Image 1 (tube, rainbow, N blue to C red):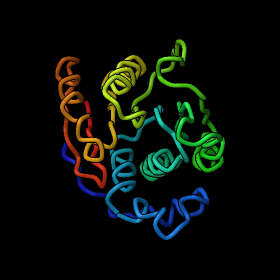
Image 2 (image 1 turned 60 degrees about the vertical axis):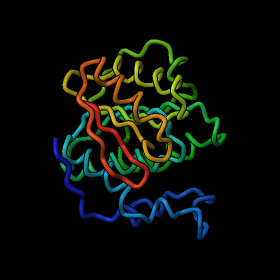
Image 3 (image 1 turned 60 degrees about the horizontal axis):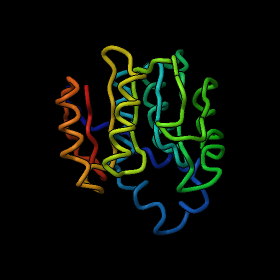
Image 4 (image 1 turned 90 degrees about the vertical axis):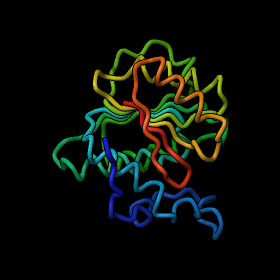
Length: 195
């Protein structure tokens, strides 16, 4: 899959849903790059997923971007969204995120846990976004979980490959060992697309 950058600037779409800590002159730099959340919208627009699972929700900006992209592809379809976050970065972040996410789908829920403690999830997802704890052991746990809930033909996105460069080689190795093709996408923080 070759990805072309989506023309839409996501900042105006995300701005109403920003957390107060991201409304500072330096807090929103990653939101204004035009090379980060735009990719989430682009990929989701191309894939038109019926169900999205996200590991690492924080304030919901990636989720909103993916849901917005999917809605642009098919405005009559409401995507199922499941967010998983242990809230180690921000207590209460999932509840804050859901307020924005539910503006784009009424079929959204979150779980306050990590990929190891979710229990059995029988749902399957077309798109799984991994943006968890950014260590190799956590990454492997998140990828195993992602594979378990991924529908046949689905896509896994792994974020922060250039922000945490030690994660790129293990991600590529895991993809190869598990039958996925890995494509690096040069976003602001680097993303790996596994299909």
